[in-house]
Image 1 (cartoon, rainbow, N blue to C red):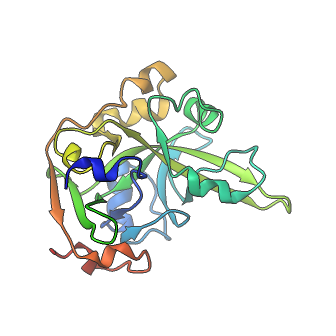
Image 2 (tube, helix red, strand yellow; image 1 turned 90 degrees about the horizontal axis):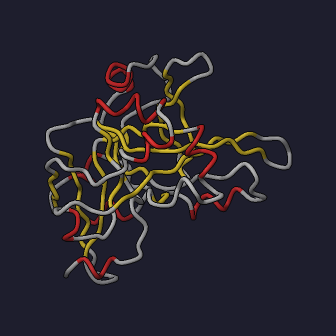
Length: 227
């Protein structure tokens, strides 16, 4: 089936991080975080690592909940609708504009999943970025306080138009940052950040995998096995 079967679906809604905490610490130049582990099927509302600037200006890794909850939200459940932010409008939308200005982050990943086909018969694909075993999505993060004063930190992944390979199965793709762009994404002005949100120009590989990935409880290496 063509890309039209996936028009309007969330993107990106699943990804994986096949790297140990010490590898992430070395790659992103952050202290080792003892809660980071290999993940094969990261899904919305789950916790996963992001890299952001700490109060002292240095980079840090932190475990945040996937699905951004604006500070003014009444209910944490709104985060399930905000796992992604469109790069074209994120700097203007009330839900994202404050984070876009002040709380950008890197979301470490080894790849992501997308589905193609008709409902009930969709084929999942694992999408790998060139020869990079570890890369970063462009992300935003927020801090939300519940009515009983519980603080929850959340994040979203920016999306953009697809490159030629991704366009064969979907009309959006996550914003993938080159390593040389990481500092600009974290520290740059809004204008500097905006120019980074373009379709990834490098090679990507789309590999059909087993439907095991469709259940988020299957957070096991086998979800990456060939179909």
